Image (cartoon, rainbow, N blue to C red; front, side):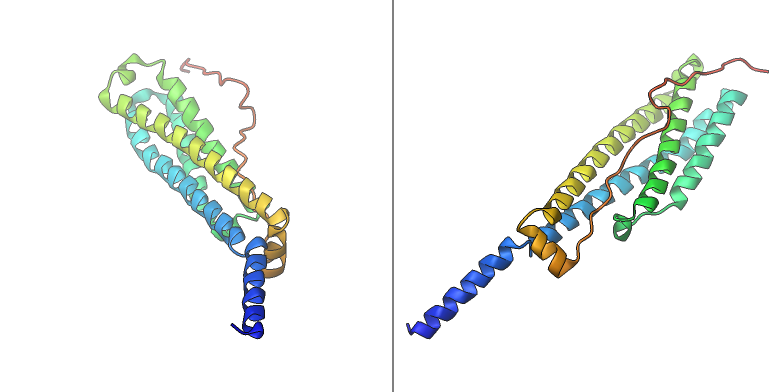
Length: 200
C-alpha cells in the first residue's frame, strides 16, 4: 500500500469519525423519534374524540344538568379537533399551547361528565355505559403515556442538539431548533369539580 493511499484512508476514516461524532445521524434520529411520539399523542387524542359521540348517546337520557355538561364536552371536542399540530409545528410554542388548551378542555369536560354519571345508578348499570367508561378511562391513560413518551423524546432531542459534539451537526448542517414539550396542565386541576345535581 502506498503512502498516499494510506494517508487517504486515514483522512477518510478521521472525517467519517468526526462527522459521526458531530450529530450527523443522532440529530435526525432524535427528531424523527420525537415526531413519531407526537403521532402517537395525536392518535390517542383522536381515539378520545371518536369515543365522545358514543358518550353523547349514553348521556342523552341523563337529564338537563348532564346535557349541559355534554354540550360543553361536544363543543370542546369540536374545537379540539379543529386545531391540528403536525410534525412541522412541534417547534411552535404558540400553536402547541393552543392545542394543549383545547385538549385540556376536552379532558376536563369528560371528567365532569363521568363524575356526574356516578350519581345515576340506572346509567351505571347499563353495559353500554360500563364499556364506554372503561374505554374512556383507558384512553385517558393512553393519552398520559403517549404524552410522557413524547416529552421524553423531545427532551432527548433538545439535549442532543444542545450538547457537544452533536450541537455542531445540529446547528451547522441541520439548523436544528428545539421542539416544544406538551404541557398537560388544566387550570384549576388541583381542585376537584363540584356537581350541582339539583334540577330547576
